[in-house]
Amino acid sequence: MKTGKALLITDIQNDFCPGGALAVPEGDRIIPAVNRISSLDIFDEVVATQDWHPRGHISFASTHEKEPFETIELEGITQILWPDHCVPGTRGAEFHPRLDMNPVNLIIRKGYDPEIDSYSGFVENDRKTETGLHYYLRGMGIKEIYLCGLALDFCVYYTALDGLKYGFRVFLLRDAAKGIDQPEGSIDEALRDMRDQGARLMDSRELQ
Ligand code: VGL
Ligand code: ZN
Image (cartoon, rainbow, N blue to C red; front, side, top):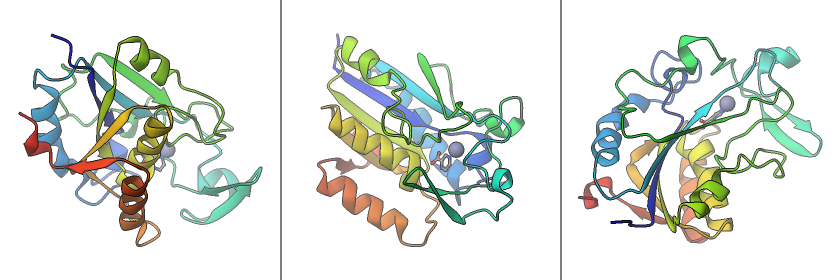
């Protein structure tokens, strides 16, 4: 039976886990919870996003000969500069080896245009270039999206806001997401904003 629910697993890649280039503290600790929920029978669709940046990507500090976490203005958009991460062909770009990919029926790669960063799974950071994910989910009759993954204050956050804009009901699985908190306080700010805009926070253990 169709439920109209989709699970979106954001960027659980080696570079966002301890030892990776842009490690989220304890990022790998969410994996058991994610594996449990992805294998439940309640989702029509299980989608994973994969951050995917060519060498010399515009979001890399090295491209601008700057230090990671400095910011620059790019065509009116403030861009945080990141360490080189999620470069195709590197181990860092691969999904974490303990993430169960068997239930995943669609992988969306994002950020592969050298000139545009992409946090959200729906729209790139120019706020125009669509990944196509909302057409897919709508076409499949999805009404509710459940979010988990990395990083809570960047890619999960932007995916939540865009999900709301596209008219989905959005649920954040709070225990199955972790943030960078860079700059400090950005996790709390992201949580507050997601709630204010209509996302609902819940614990993954409520899903059976
Ligand atoms: C992400 C920063 C840069 C994320 C991706 O997955 O949250 N953050 N690229
Ligand atoms: Zn990235």
